[in-house]
Length: 142
Image (cartoon, rainbow, N blue to C red):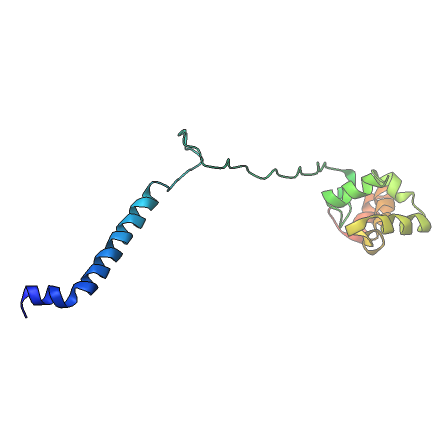
């Protein structure tokens, strides 16, 4: 078969292949101009169609070091919750009676039940009265 016969016989296939190649070149070239690579250090003046806005972070609660964190099982978050319920000191916690303990326990939201389970009032009383007795009962760490 000569070249002329091949072209005459396969011209539809050759035309389709050329059209696909042309479309591929157009698509690849079109994508080059739209690629944007921004980094934190990028100081270029390029802008996007829409402004990029980072979502606002929720403010973190201010956690302060409290004397309540000396108790076993009390971290900064529970100490803040206890302070919010009116028990900001060991003395205030030690002064609670059974009814007040149950009421406080019910109001602590995600920490409900912790006052009784961790024996926080007993810990506060012992720590106020005698750190040695506290240490003997609950261990070191106060």
